[in-house]
Amino acid sequence: MLKKIFIGLLVIIIVLQFIRPAKNRMEIPGTYGIGKQYPVPVNVVSILEKACYDCHSNTTRYPWYNNIQPVGWWLNNHIKKGKGELNFSEFGNYSFAKQAKKLHKVAKEVKEGGMPLNSYTWIHRDAILNEDDKTALVNWAEGLSKQIATVHNIDMSKKVPKS
Ligand code: HEC
Image (tube, rainbow, N blue to C red):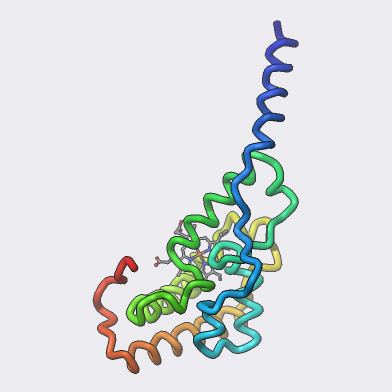
């Protein structure tokens, strides 16, 4: 009896390995990436790449354990949710109001330590931001947010439009 249950479970686990979400990897660098639209200093690019792009861009660097299900599904869920909120690869497609407000939120999340997610830095130790990283990212995001808001006359007290 036990042996049958064990074999049954083993079969289920093996079958699960074949059900995989599509990978979030764009082959061609997009024209709507934030770096194509706005100046992003090199140090900020490297901070975004190491700490944010896995969930907030179209170019996720997948770890080996993405190949183990259901871990891969769990990662995929974070990527989908993160990208839905903010996708730096599609940033140029956002309205100016949304751009200014999302950047303002970037500064806020980083200042408050909400991003990157703890479950992420727990494994990706290199994504833990030190004080210099935080200052650079916050200053850039706030500066650019203010610039976009001023140039396009945006009322920052209004809520982020959905599209
Ligand atoms: C492991 C995936 C992951 C990483 C890495 C990550 N985020 Fe997020 N982020 C999310 C998810 C998921 C959400 C959706 C809200 C939630 O679940 O907390 C989110 C939400 C946000 C929001 C809120 C958007 C809004 O309009 O409310 C901002 C801003 C943000 N992230 C910025 C960043 C920045 C900046 C970094 C890098 C320093 C980063 N995130 C790293 C997954 C991630």
